[in-house]
Length: 281
Image (cartoon, rainbow, N blue to C red; front, side, top):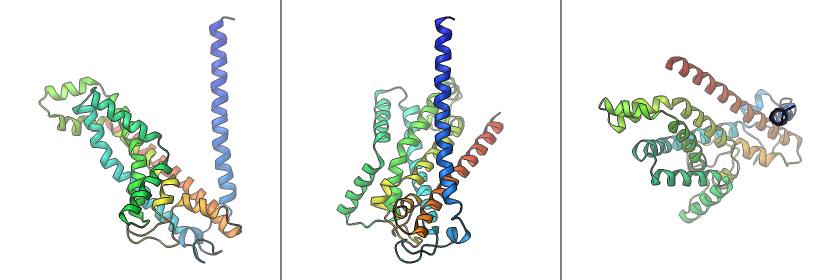
């Protein structure tokens, strides 16, 4: 047998083993979450807030954490998307292949690598300086900084794959850079933007470190952006170590709900992406 054939068999086997390990780990995580969270799941758990004071009561559910997580993740993802899209358009249309564009990409690469707890500590420091209290608004702002580099770098990579001929054809027809960005580039990058928003939302709704310092925790549902809010990751963090079976059950249900939300969003994004591809064709 030739050396190249042996190498191919070796690396194929290595890749298959790696894939099996990753898939098995994922299935094991999902199994453990469902096997512990599903028995405690009931209508009361998802329609009521905790009762007894600061999640320690045996009655009630996790409605406050569900609502808080959805508001926080949606607000942070929306804010990050609104900020990131103009940045990506600027570095790909207005200063394409320049030193400034590469410097901006490097900055966002560094931001992507910063742990979310550092963003939380930064936000907490600013809040102390300004005399602010923990609130949903503070959490949205800090989490948007966490997911901002995610959206920027994913959308940027998608736009860099767009053929240069599309730019030249648009300019040849008399379109300005802004018109080219809006009517040509954005349509071509729509699928990538959708993927970036999905990834950002998944990270935002699953983040615990940043919101621990900025959003706080409460048993009630926030009615204002200036009130503290509970989130599903913090519900898991606080309740899992409590030696009360009913409270621990809420932690596992929180993990189950978080997993289900991400699964639903992933399926919706896949459906929307397929519809866009059909429409584009």
